[in-house]
Image (cartoon, rainbow, N blue to C red; front, side):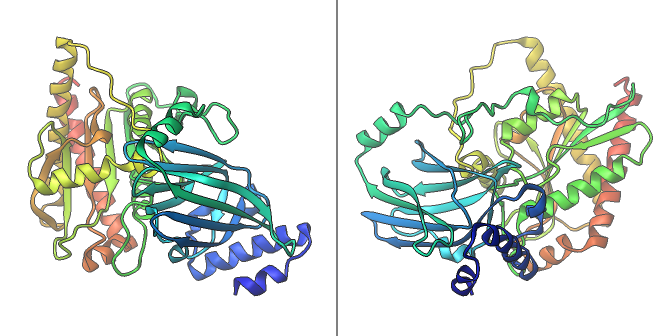
Length: 423
């Protein structure tokens, strides 16, 4: 199909028009999620083909684009990764065409924000790109990005990381894209006395999250649908102002999500997820709160996976600064944790006899996305995409409406309790 399609679009103008037609067709048949958005509005690059060959000593990746892509390459340690930054790009090839092999044990690609995309190559050991170049298709039908990776020793890789001028705060064009307040979306201005709630759709962009066992639906789509529905429903309640941490399919780091909630003076933070488990018979909702010590192995494993979100997107691992020994800060954290537990209990009370939950449905672990010291926060597992029955419910609009209504009642009950205690 792609071979004939490439022959049909020889001139640059026809290629651009044809690329949009191909993207539309791919959307229609399900190769691309609808969340990519309007091609006409931003006219992203189209990566319409990919292939990977090689072994554990040398591996080549070739990606076909409808026009010339500008790119940059960076190296990250712990674990070793190669990051390729691109302008806005729609990835239109089947995932199996770029399945990890050879020197690469994991390959991720996707949107970072409205103007950029990223490919993250997690390697099996120290690796460098001996060749990284764009070349025109011999028949003048687009361009291809060619990446030749080869094995190197640890010292050579460490030197690559040390000498590069890039940091994760720089975009592919070298301009600043730091996690600053200028990047923080603000909701419509809350009225004086409004109870402000940050609704966080887990995952997004290059970080797809879990994949459905039957429909192959991506978790990032499920969480955004629930988050939008909950935000809309909460905003119908007098005295409540809810907003989304992300409004479309873009990547947000865990620290960005926390910062968005804090800088918008949220009184609650609700992060929505729908993960997978190896035990496919486990199903039902779970509510998590933060704790230094996990309540059980399931909670610990889940927190570990969720905390890898930044690594999946090719972000540098930055050591957290040591906390200042501050009694007032410690007291604030304790009070916030108590409020978080109160919210979790309110949610589970709403779910009782209405929504199936797992055994011991209130659990806790060290989720980085729940770490705001002054914002009561919960992580809600809506169900598990690894369970066929849960997956059906997660995609059912009427069930989504039921969950949203129950969550709204839980929030209202929590808010009433806080106000009654002088909050």
